[in-house]
Image (cartoon, rainbow, N blue to C red):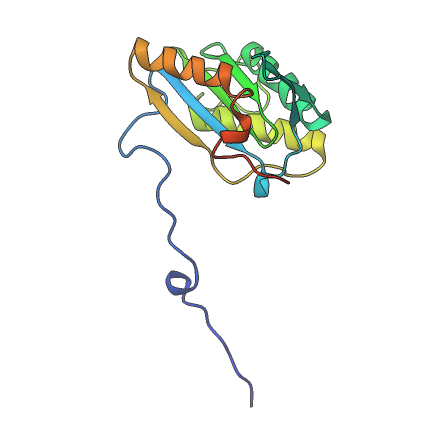
Length: 177
């Protein structure tokens, strides 16, 4: 007797909530706050050093994976005419960045391919370049985004990025690993 098992995909896999804002065009000119996490929140990008009780700031010391990510974040500004990484911080297990999208969405070179230069395209290209040099995937699936809607919103997020190393031990992405 041969047993054949079939899988009902709808029952066996949890349904994922959409991560993007419904009916919003991420090619739209504007500013976006992006967070990328490492897989399983592994602390392989950097460590937080310095700081003391007198209020000296804490600094980010990049590990080799963080140095590679830093290199590609800087190169992305050269690759796209319409996308600019404005500010970023490479934390131990995640990256926060502000991305500006302007009109005219073509990449400056033919590599990878001339696709729409959306936020999602930027993130997938960045991850692909890093992973190629890493020798494997280190990133969690997807990314978190927030559409920056005002100058006050931008300033609050810019301050959050700047202060993130100082608040690392209180961060929701902090782990002891």
